[in-house]
Each structure stands twice: as structure tokens, then as C-alpha cells.
Image (cartoon, rainbow, N blue to C red; front, side):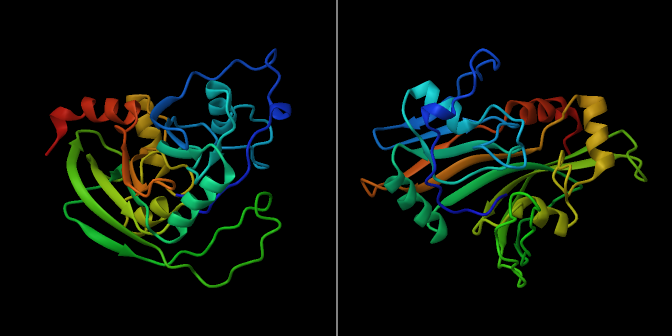
Length: 265
């Protein structure tokens, strides 16, 4: 999960991709909208905004939503490209800054669902500081940060599965569906925290288990990251009222779990 901070950039009409060379992205699913903010269900694989790391990409959530609503939009936070789920925008930079301040003050409640390797049979707290991982391109202007940053995540086991397939050195394949509640927003926090307790998230090509990822691709045609932001709760930046936005986990994750029903233990 990426570090959370307010964004105040927006796509302008001059930045639109050439419509003759790019097929329009399917309409985004609107979860909530009023005159100040809008929340969408971001599909996996969609970048939030332009990135120097992915120079050849032509589709972004900011651009797609702007074109869909015919209004400028400002992301209040971000989700990693492979992560799906609730993504919040505002219609002006001031409101985006107010939402971003709530994130920095840890006033926003976020809930994720993930499918991980192994049996997670209990609930617990991961209190494990994370050192910022710099990217040579995206972070070339940032000052190196030596000290690890505090990072905490509450996890809860929801279901366990045992599949009769040998993966790696194990005779069977064991997995768990978990709920994750981060109270901080460090870069790739959830992925790195689950690796720390030896339960990597399936489909994680950066921190995860390559053998498990290949097994899921081969036997279940699953090629996404099994991580979805399913709820965000925050104070409306204008009215001050508490607002919760929910969405089901991504359909590909649900498809895999449905296929595993007979293997639930």
C-alpha cells in the first residue's frame, strides 16, 4: 500500500490522450458522488495518474474519471496500480487537501480484503516499522530517509482453504482470506507486513511467493494482486458528517474464492 498524502494535481484537457490512438477505458463504477467529492471502484491494473515509471501508459483513473464526468478531478489519496477498490477524489484542490489532511492525521478508516498464502487462524496487530523504498525514477528528487517509519496493521482471519495440489515443497496448498485494517499508509505497507508474518498476498510480484503466483495463474487464471480496498470511512470535508463508502472485493478475487468453496476448512 502506498504512502498516503494529499494530491492537488489534475489532468487538463490539453493532457488528454489522442482519441484516435487509444481506446476509451470502460466507465468507472461510481460508488458515491455529491457536489464536492466522488468515490470510484478502481479496477486492478489502472494507474491513478501519470507516472514516470510507466511512461508508455495512456490510461489513468484521473483522466478516465474526468472524461466520464466532464469535470476536473483531484485524487485525495492513491492506490497501487495492482490494487483495486475504493478511490476517493474531489472536484477542487482545496477539498482534496482537506481529505489529504485527514489521511495524514489518521482520521480515515480503511479496510482491505486480501487472499494470502498459508493458514491465518487468528487476529492480531502487526507493529513493524518500514523503511521507505526508493525508486530510481519516481523518487529521484526525494531526500534519502534513513530511519524506518512506524507502520501498524490489524489483521483478522475470515476463512481458510486447503487445496489438494502440491505447490513447492508442500503437499497441499493452503490459503486464507483476511481483513486488513492499516492505521498508517506506508509504501506497499500491507504487502510488506503480510510478508513479515510469512503470509504473502497472492499475486504480489514484488514481495510475494513466485511459486504460488504461478500456481494461481496456471490453475485458476488469476493474474491480479489479491488485494482490494473494500471500505473507506472519513469526515465529509464540507459537511463534517461521517461517511463510509463500501464496495465488494474485486470480482476476480471472488471468482477464485467461489472455486475454492469445497476446499474451505
